[in-house]
Length: 199
Image (cartoon, rainbow, N blue to C red):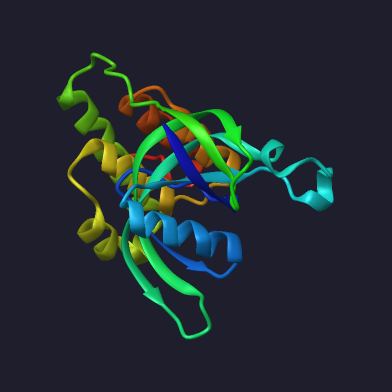
């Protein structure tokens, strides 16, 4: 499938996560208009290095793994910019870029998470461990974290990946994890050691 791409520096979108964006560049205004007409999602990929650092063409400076972004709200401003809200959907892998568009587009293959075979109970137990680690890491925010934490193990992984103090490479490693349990175990491994001690 061919999807428009919205590359963002050091940002990884996870399934189920709501992300507000400000659209101001002309090419992304075009992208937004096209998405609003088609009703189809666009893709968010991470910019790996700036043009100043590498001098490479744009398509060589973005990740080959990303997440479909489903448009939920769009507010057009008087100056032509827009504030939008998207929600993360399926993971995808870039197969090749389409360069004859006003904005970067790519042929992508959806890359759903594998069934690890461990079962839902094991996934839920791992999700509870991740939640407990978050609560120990940020005790002042415990009530908000408990209230915001989803019951679903996949969404819990997405929630934790947004809260933990991770860099872009770590977030992308989590996005690339083959299964939900792999994603949760990676997150536990990235929790600062001070929050890993069990009560």
